[in-house]
View 1 (cartoon, rainbow, N blue to C red):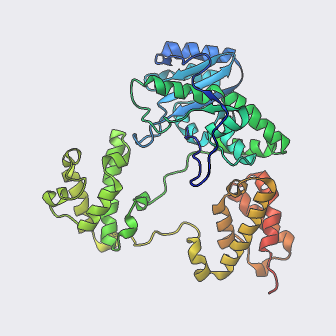
View 2 (cartoon, rainbow, N blue to C red):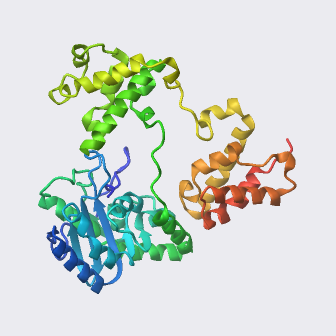
View 3 (cartoon, one colour):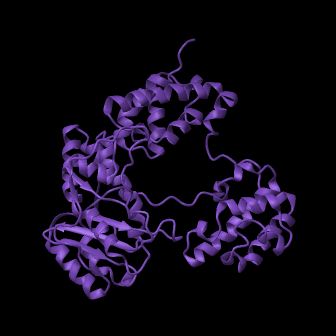
Amino acid sequence: MPVADEPEKGHIVEESTAEPLLAPADGVPPVLVTAAEVAAAAAKIASGSGPLAVDAERASGFRYSARAYLIQLRRAGAGTFLVDPIPVTNALGPLAEAINDLEWVLHSADQDLPGLAELGLRPARLFDTELGGRLAGFERVGLAAMVERLLGRALRKGHGAADWSTRPLPDEWLNYAALDVELLLELRDEVAAALDEQGKSDWAAQEFEHVRITEPSAPKPDRWRRTSGIHTLRRARQLAVVRELWTARDALARARDVAPARILPDAAIVSAATADPKTIAQLRTLPVFGGPRQRRYSRDWLAAVERARTMPDSDLPPLTQPFDGPPPVNRWERRDPTAAARLVRARAAMGELSTTHAIPVENLLSPDLVRRLCWDGLPDYDKVGDESELSSAIDGFLKSGGARPWQRELAVSALTEALTPREQ
């Protein structure tokens, strides 16, 4: 679960008058760790009423996987439940049967749904309070900020980035976890009321459904190019060292289910690419590589460096990453001034819509989709008969790019007006 919004630097933060929420009203429930306990909880949840508040805690930054290490559930008439999915991974059938037909309420659902889906837990309907807050125009959409704004309670945060694979889980962490769903159902009702008052309920429903059915994106190619500090390297052979070390580290991290940065930090990879060590002794003189935890992998790291050093020039990675789509915007003016001008007008149009409807511009329409439209998604102007034909082309492009009906309804006319060729 995301941590609470932080105050912006330089801003005076007034002391909150919200009532602190320090512990669940019914106390912290026990962690369920057996099949029998899970089955009993499923029966209680099934006897409850209304939507189901759901949260999951992962171990991002500590583990390679995005699996859930704790599941929090709450339903009216049933209470709160904490489930440790690790010992009961193969015994969650009764729980899935009880909850998969319900409306789930999550905050930032796209973060938790993939890990829950791995366990066979998938909602029939979804309400995302964080996304709903964005559509309602709230400036701060962290869970604590929204609970304080809409419910007048101060929700203490602080363990969201902890290593939730730790066992046993500390009592303080379990208290934090239970609080994450304590008021989620009440928050859902307040957000729903705000959306309804603004006439945005249907828009929100479309967005929630989009999040619910969207499968996780496939890993992007050349992920090794995101290594911190890689911009300091100037030779293809150095990039090859980064690629080989990154790949070796990723394989080891996946096998051990440990976050890659805990296996070998990015800075160490870049230093090896710069120094080009020829022996284990030389490798161990570099920062990190000489540490006691790294010495046992010295042969693996040196083998990766040697693969890069000896590979044919034809196998070396290009110095610049091939683009899948438009180039970086800062290159548009030089490569295609007309497209650059279109993007300026399109962004201005989307900015006006954002202000008019009090919705962040990135939620009105994917910025990447707008860039692709302006770069190469428009028909040849010489072949466009009138604005209606251009409007149809824009609508078709946005639809093929995954834009929801409400987004197209708002954006197509504005973009058509902005992108219609004008006489100079």
